[in-house]
Image 1 (cartoon, rainbow, N blue to C red):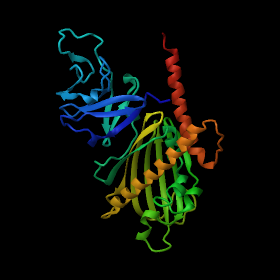
Image 2 (cartoon, rainbow, N blue to C red):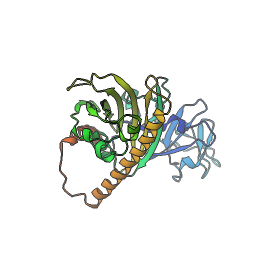
Image 3 (tube, rainbow, N blue to C red):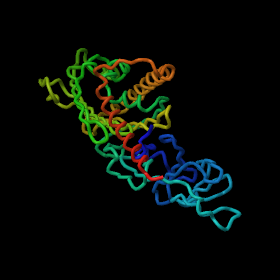
Length: 350
């Protein structure tokens, strides 16, 4: 169900302090993890399960660079090995907890859920974090109770903006007529298109005169498991009718979004959106953040309702339409990686 040899987002770096009680419980791809910062600020990720009686280590406490289980006091170092068992002088060799490779990048915390030897930081998606001085970004989070494949399909098809987000990000059916170019990459898709001669989105229409029109240039990079990196720029209406707009740039925006499946039925959604410092103005990024928060709640309602119907009748027929091209390509990439991992497991000697 989940690709293991991949980097999964465990949240923003701000979510994990050096505080005494700074233990962060996460559920990622069906596994329970606990994360904490060592005194040198490096992040440790380990299975949230003591090897004694399976008590959650997230209910424990930090001691130096170690974590102590508060059920029977066993202490584990950052490598997962038990270093102390109160009442015992000898520590069993098998007294250890699984740990996971961790990388902090673009203000996100990334955890590798597969084989540690294959943890290649080059596979982390390129993004822009709130620490980048060239951008003014706001952060958000929402939990969505749906299967992450539905989130993939939703993000790989932005034609739904016209309908799901008619009161926020949309406001025109122009999004239904887009003709995106999807290019397959090794672990995802690269999508570009231009929405031409469209009115401002509903959330910002009051800022412009009646009849104002713009060209919107969109570049989306999606990668497995479900990372969505969006460069979204607004331009004056240009004369070009094909390819990128040639209208003057009005607003340059960027959004980094990571969808982390908790299990088969729910996802954690971490996102940012904001403007370049060069095109920002007071209050604009805040307005966009408010609209984004509302839009993700619109997605949440639709996706959770969709997933409920799919679980009620998993064998119900469905019809493909033109806007399924993007979702189909990204799900094909995901399934290819899942099959490759399954084959690798099959050929390992017993």
